[in-house]
Length: 372
Image (cartoon, rainbow, N blue to C red; front, top):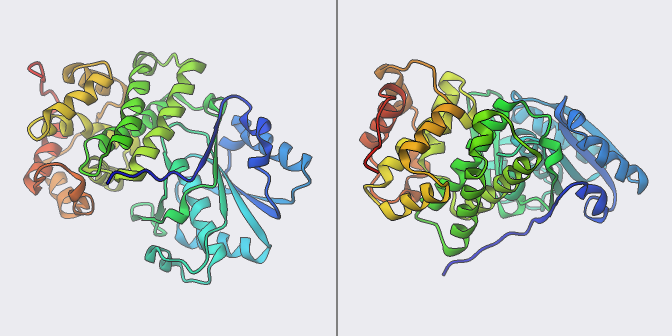
């Protein structure tokens, strides 16, 4: 029977932090987890500390999160939280920062070794986590998933637990205004991939379908803005809602093969996460039409497009200028993690299908889809 579990309180709109302080203020000391720039530049950190100061909440700020932050550093942060009596956590930033906050909250509440976190069964509930995204793409603010680097940015592994859903998430699109246009594009495409992979998923239900199709529609309504780079405040609001909606969808279906395959481009070629996934999305849709054409058509229709136009959009917004060889693809296949999500993919997705999508997307880039 289809079911939908979403324990995160969502608060959205301009100045939502100051309009809803009771969901930010909890009993006891708080640890604010963030990176070195985005929380300050976006204004999110100032809004948070203003509310905490007004309510006499004691807090510390950990502002050292980077793309290189690994499990040892996260574990040490959790121990620091425990030793200093932290009772809850506020994460401000992109997906990496929010995931660091969620993982450190597990360590802070449990006597465990670093890798024990992947057992996904914890004696004590993690500390409550409040998420404040400053990018529109991660989905971490509405999911039970956490991705961490194993002290090597090229070796990343996720875990999941329903105890890792954020307690509350604040969605204020003003915090994305300072994002460079390339980051805006990459994160938007990542959010689009979340929604598409949820809709084209054996675990999809009426509930997840509703959320994922709306996320696709919202991003599709911003396609011209993403192409031109003239992104308005209204566009940013739509993209932020779409990103969290995409997270809500994959929280209940899991991801599909696009993310698993894109992982290789990021690890082996250091292609940014959203652009890596976007490089493969069109060919995955083309593969899907041989297995469930109606749902594949639903995706491009929700995006207000056809597959040929969809490809033109992706080529403009997240181009893949890198040159790839068959030898590169051999490496991708050798390190494949598709088996972790294969059960979510409709049809029998074979290693040959995986190879062909890589070849079509990365070597034979000029394929046409006029007969869609």
